[in-house]
Image (cartoon, rainbow, N blue to C red):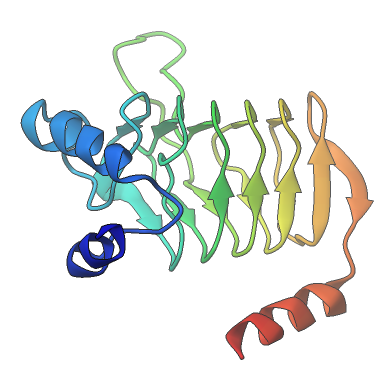
Amino acid sequence: MKKIIRKIFGLRYDLSISFYVIDFIFRKLLRQNADIQYAVHHTSTIRCAPRLKTGKGTWPGDSPRVYINAFNGIEIGDYTNIGPGVSIISANHDLIDNEKQASAEGIKIGAHCWVGAGAVILPEVQLGDFTIVGAGAIVTKSFSGGYCVLAGNPAKVIKQLNKETCISFVQQKRK
């Protein structure tokens, strides 16, 4: 029965039916994260949803306690995972008038990335493909080359990934 319901409504298999019921209550009835076109965990918050662009297989906010501020724009590539408690903040407050948002370049996160639990990504950061952000890391600068593991506060590269292995992985998944 569950398989039939999932197929009819196009529901993901990695999320329970109760997740979708709770999502319906919070997003459709209570209008929390109402601008989002996919299921979002009821404890997650996405601000300025029209400025959030996501790739195929990417659903930021489906983990608990995710906070996304997309005032200056955020682009997230295909098959990127956002862990629980992550904050992605594209805008700071004006230094003088805290009722205003400071203008900044948007955040770009590449394809096949993973942002671990409790990590924070700050304004103007660009992360290349296959960038893994360790749990609790604070990313304050860009790592646009990708193919690396970041950790710490501020985040720094702790490991380089083999680019050919990553590309081979993607090619095998397509088969």
